[in-house]
Length: 114
Image 1 (cartoon, rainbow, N blue to C red):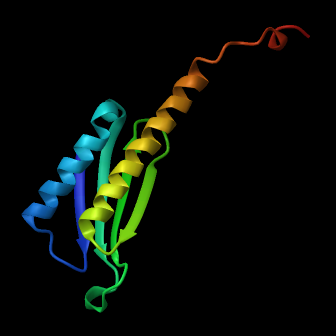
Image 2: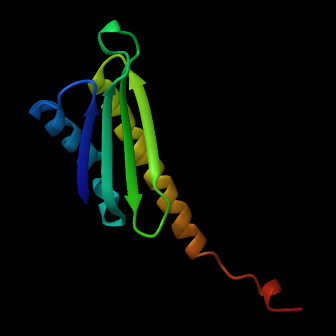
């Protein structure tokens, strides 16, 4: 799994990079064999004006399937990262479960009789 972390509006510190990478790995570890790339974009939307302005956007690329894009905005960057990672893990699990169900659907006999 390839990681790419980008920032907009502030500098990427070692602690933010390490925290983000650790949270992503923990959230997606169970299904990491399906993931080809994870791109995380962290942004301070309003800059020094304050408010709900720390955004974490996670783009997960799956082998042979559509990407999953999750975004969360909070006042605290670490909370935005936590929530986005949790939502990303749930979304990925649901998507993979649906794909598994679709591949293992029983074939109806009505399809063969006409």
